[in-house]
Amino acid sequence: MRNKYYLLLLLALMLPWLTEVLVGQSWVRILDFALLYLMLSLGLNVVVGYAGLLDLGYIAFFAVGAYCYALLSSPQFGLHWPLLVVLPLGALSAGVFGVLLGAPTLRLKGDYLAIVTLGFGEIIRIFLNNLSAPVNITNGPQGISDIDPLQVGSFVFNHDFSVMSLHFPAVINIYYLFLLAVMIAIVFSYRLEKSRIGRAWMAIREDELAASCVGIHTKRYKLLAFGLGATVGGLSGGLFAGFQEFVSPESFTLMESVMILCMVVLGGMGHIPGVIVGSLLLSVLPELLRASVGWQRSLLGAVWVDPANLRLIMFALALVVMMLIRPEGLIPSRLRAKELHHE
Image 1 (cartoon, rainbow, N blue to C red):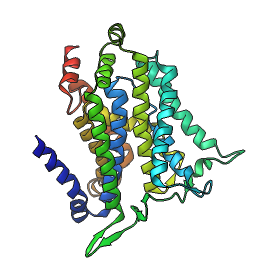
Image 2: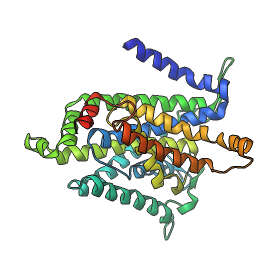
Image 3: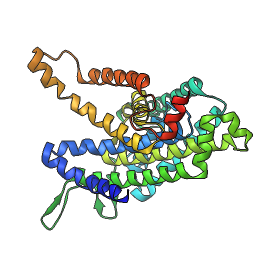
């Protein structure tokens, strides 16, 4: 078993180099974004998969982390705080927002909770769009540019560098930084799942009334799930802002929340390998669909379906098929599969 993990780690370390040689450097950048989506999926999995709380506004925490980084490391306020200060601060801010969202929704379940969290995500996006007057904080729809790159000491991940004859492009440096963050998030999620907290979340997810009857403080554990999930989202947002060196409200729409939820549901809620497979699959698939433009032109003489629309159609079909045939996801946990099939 341990050899299998070592093999996967070796493959992950070699992947950007193989990708650059086989399909070009632009695909390494796609891998960077896939790792960001993976981090977001792992954070949402804590809320949805472990605690069973349907959160449709998760992208708001991503936005909080990104804007925290942007405001503290850009010419917007003339601040240029170091990465190792700004990233934890953004994650902490997102965690606080997660608790603030969770506090008034503790009595809500299912559809009602989904609607409230959806509204929270939209409120954050609207605030980011309008906090430009009378005091310009977020620069409105124009967003914040010239954000400081991801830098530790004198080493800048966003720049190329060479060691002897070996050249490291910026996208590969970013890949390794994001891979490290993802591995920390995976270990964090795994330890949570196996801990007393994870077992309490599982009990709340299966039957909240029974969990409260056996002495589990359900409100406290729900707040903890919202806070920890949001913290991971905020950390991802900070990395995104430093990577892009630009943020705007357009990056934090409802569609992004739905996309991340689809990744968790498609892979298998509450199961880390399933979440990894689901997020990587749905991150890379849209880029493959761009090739459909050439196929449509060669076969039909024109582009009949835009790749963006084709992506939505395929996602919708995939989700419908999954709900009918395999509601537990592609790679579900044994317990989750038993729960669904028992019902």
